[in-house]
Image 1 (cartoon, rainbow, N blue to C red):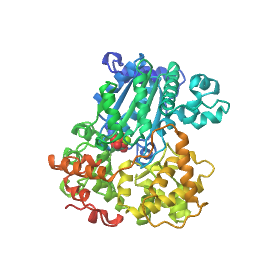
Image 2 (image 1 turned 30 degrees about the horizontal axis):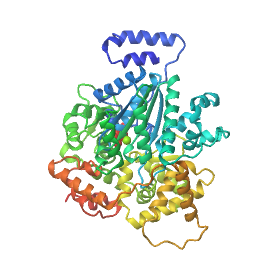
Image 3 (image 1 turned 90 degrees about the horizontal axis):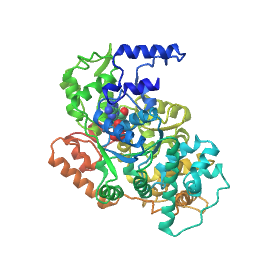
Image 4 (image 1 turned 180 degrees about the vertical axis):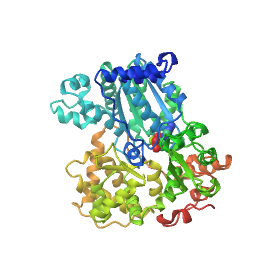
Length: 566
Ligand SMILES: Nc1ncnc2c1ncn2[C@@H]1O[C@H](COP(=O)(O)OP(=O)(O)O)[C@@H](O)[C@H]1O
Ligand SMILES: [Mg+2]
């Protein structure tokens, strides 16, 4: 079956099955050989899509996918490389990478994925820890030991599971600053290359604009040293987040000088793909001749400029308002396009969607927005002050509205926002004292709830520690207060994860914020209706007043106060 799928996906038409009949014959053979076809999947309705983190079928991006496939082909024949997927928030970087990694795994690649999370401080090398941990867990002792080779002590510093499984691995003797870091980089690189001798490796690092500096340097080191190996490093970042002083800008400049990476630049989907996307979300059974009424699709394309996240959010908003609904595989609307009231900016549409949720649900989501790496029910319960049953209802409300989802399928117990932009919207609304208070409460709750196994929660803990040290009136602390213990524990673990790393804290300084606002203003002035991208926000002209001025208003009344047109 895999072989058939790959032939159907082949780049050259000559390599694909010639006719649909040939495909049918092949399928018959597979069935006759005893392989039962998978049960017909229900069309991706909201709930199913939400579990997968996907709402609709993947559309377009053919050229970009071809570029990635070409890099994969080169890698499979021993020419590793670094490819960067670049674009504004919501443009489809993660989705493209996800679609590509599925293809890569069908081609036999071992796919390792690591994420970077937004926060003023992060645990060093977190995306690598995440990616390597996945691999380590699935590997037998003998195979893993042989792949780790002499670099085992260094890899064990990064991935605690390695030390847990092989407590006899000797500690590496300390070296002076830079040499110690190089030894770590070399050990990780040799480990990945060693893995790639049995299976080609695709290492995907998402949102590296939020990566800590040590991770970026390791990324750079990998890019330099996998060129003769079956290793493809794929990294996604928001170009609009970078200013001259951003750590990634520096790393990109030197990678560029050395011609060490290829860029896959994502811009808005063309109108045709937006039409396809809308009809795909409308249950995929629309007739190809008239997928959606073109007037409606045109209006959405015009407002969203082809940003798929924006397209999805507008559709969800219109469905929630009862302005459009699905009937017989078609989107149906009773009002004229002008009367639909399509929101003019992402922030407006997100605000309106949040405003439809109950006030307690908004409060819970605001609290959750302080946890950038995902949140658990237990921590929410400990901090929110809600009854257990009530909190479950609130979670359901947010899940149903597709504002949050459960991470990695059902049963993980960790929830995350459907998109970082939703979290950022809520977080931006919290005033500083409230943020500080929530961070402190969350940090203390995390330490209580996860006392037995703190490690997976260190990023959030570290974030809480940093964020709660903003100037504010603090409660009297004692040497045994949970707050103090968390401080030292998170700080200590952060250091021990990479005591040889560069400073891990990255703060958003006031001048950086001022620069961003200025750039945002310039971007707006130079192109009417363009995305105010320098803020990381695909926001159109009408929302600019809100970006430049203070935000006010109650979260449950966003559309009228926070994001009204100036
Ligand atoms: N080509 C596409 N076809 C269909 N849906 C898409 C496509 N690209 C992105 N999406 C959807 O748009 C939303 C935002 O995409 P995402 O990859 O998360 O953006 P980014 O990572 O650039 O912020 C997701 O729900 C995703 O599934
Ligand atoms: Mg993404």
